[in-house]
Length: 449
Image (cartoon, rainbow, N blue to C red):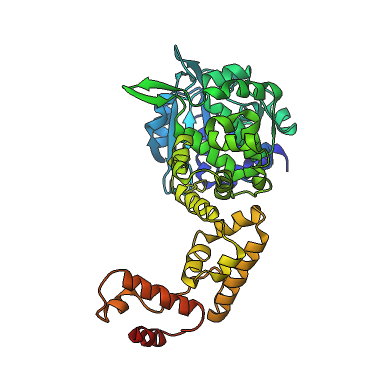
């Protein structure tokens, strides 16, 4: 499949892009370009179901663009200050596709006394600007390419295609200037490198190392002390990176110095014991929560929530596929701290065993034990689960319904309090051990108590 066929395939497979041919037909004087990550993915022949589409339109004013797109969808003006219209076509669900960015060609100039915040720019939009000028303001060469949607010509002024072939992340122009303009680009470099399994160009990596100590800088704004780089921006980049490739991400955090700046407590453990982070090696795509558990396994659980806040991981949307719940991490780390042995697992009361090893978070605990090479303990746990499931003819990940409830206990004129819980736990032990198998038998036992 050649380049033009790849472009056509992308457009045909994404129905929300129906507007391209119609817009070009209605505005013969205009030029429309697809830019950024979508171009990169076409050249990589990479399937990506989570695409952010970016378009730049030339030779037509923004009012006319806004009017035309308003007729076929919704325009969200939240990005207008940055020269961007956020477009959602009619009959498409914002929960299923991203808003599409529509913009005129732009230049960006850092504001006076900019400290590297990602909003510290003055935007100048101009319908007559060459597309190459617009591309020159972008972060990395692999993202600074465009496709002319009339001719399907690839526009690549900074040799991004060559860097794709060389599997290299390289800043556009002078790396120090790019990171001085916007420090979030350092986290994007880490994310792209981890996600694509690319190396970071030597000069670009050196600039990140020199600048990364500023990532936590703060300033006063509206009489409040705030981070120059918003935590939610860092958190999302971290979460995406850990989700795409946990092992690469950890290595890059170490290599760039970001581990020390963002996870100082983890860095201290790593500096004292360099093999501390070895259990994270070879984790797979999507194992971001497991990676964070293994990173934080020796950290005081009272500090974990604060680490999530300081790194921005707490701010990732609950509906995001990249989300890690801090409470999941705290729960597993707490269980790892209890240092179970094969003997106390065998001797543990059944209801407690169930709460630790047969609940919704137990897979994370078991996976953590596997990566920490606690083989004997894992075998003991799995054997006991099999014994319980054999008695109840259930699958290992299925919840075994309780035979009685608290209301059943209270109906026997037992007052609310510790006694109710004690009876429920005893009967749950007997149920899981296969000594009581029916509700009638459970109620009969209960009456004898």
